[in-house]
Image (cartoon, rainbow, N blue to C red):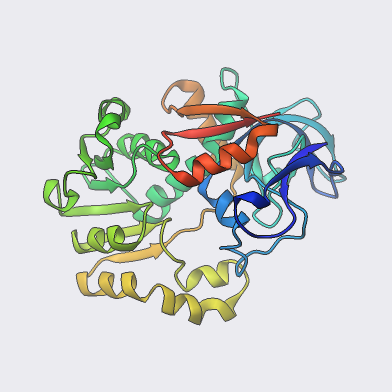
Length: 331
């Protein structure tokens, strides 16, 4: 099968497209033919080896973390899916493998794609949508009337988070380039701040909850302008100690304690809750997001589609930033 993979960690030149053996489903696994996959920032972080302390991969490692397609084979013990089902998944972190002709997934990570939802839409919403939903619903617990700040509203996570937060009844402020403001207001943003020319801390602060996708100084300033008793979650900074346990590597907790000390100390001084979030695979939550797509309650913006042979170009574009919504890979 054709696949996009790396043989070692490194820069963008390490990404190759070529022939690899197709995977076979083991016990409790589902094999599907990839019809669409999507590009996420975690893909180039994995390629660069930035996450190998948490999760290392056997080489050659097929890249890609979410995909959609048609089930072609079932491993022993799989009862919930059938050959021919249209499915999507945020794949197992320990395996990934979305940028390939055939993909293996665990049934608990899969969701059937409803009528009216395309493979591209299903793939594009998986990782980004789950990230947004878990941050808003499980960490921030955003609710009616709360003032929620979402950074980088034009990105994959951001534009979905705006819609989901609005659906929860929140008052949504987002940072984005001026060119995206009309689009983001159409998705539900109440207030848009041009990060190039305006200061979000002077526009609508203080906030009850913040979803940070950037990290660094942006995260620290967000914490400083969150009300006492509020909460901040980041998917753009460095992991906090509890992430080590989530990955089964408790010996990394002291390292993450040191790496995350600035935002944790800032949150403690401000009297707000703070944590880093590494989203988890969840087929039931993905099914809910796909149902919202089918009902028109959620939109996913696909900026551009690439054939699998051009996956390295898509990864370079993602790493460069400034992508509105999502990039999708086709077979």
